[in-house]
Length: 246
Image: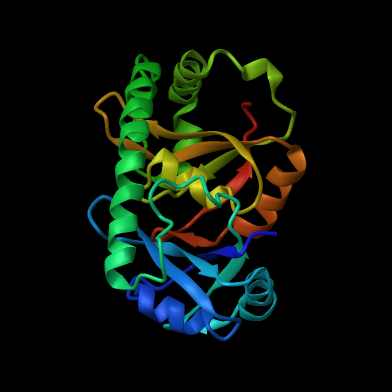
């Protein structure tokens, strides 16, 4: 097990110092960070690194469902340990170290996000004239665009449609307009290994408020439905269910 944990359902007002102070109840904290979007706004989640693995284990056991700044948080092992660019400081850091790491994290994600969106927009041509003004009803009115969106993703990823396990792909509804594919992927990686993440984009380049997640296994997909359906992410409770069109 890693000595780092992912903390979700944070209040927008929670700072890295608030998070660090709260997590000290489980052990000595080496580093705490609240993840932010490109505009510097909190994503409602963060990363905490303990000095010892035991601290991370105690945090998961003791601090899940504890209240911080008016919200019950959830704590899980950070499955992205070592994969996020620039979010591991050389020392305990503090606010300066946190901001520097966050800039590196956002910088690493921007290139992938732009590249993915370019392919996603290309895949979305030719469908979804009806639009999706209601996020929660988006999958009913956008079957055509959904098929096109997946087509674009096949082009980007080399045609892996036939190789995924049945029941491993999910439809994610009621996304915030600010949510990108990387945000979505990071959130669902708290459950298991994610092989694909998409946020649907219209012909005008605007997000439609829904997306898709594909796990390596159907078991992780089922766990995500159980644990993340209705849980707030970036200011909205997510709709998480099996993608019946996969």
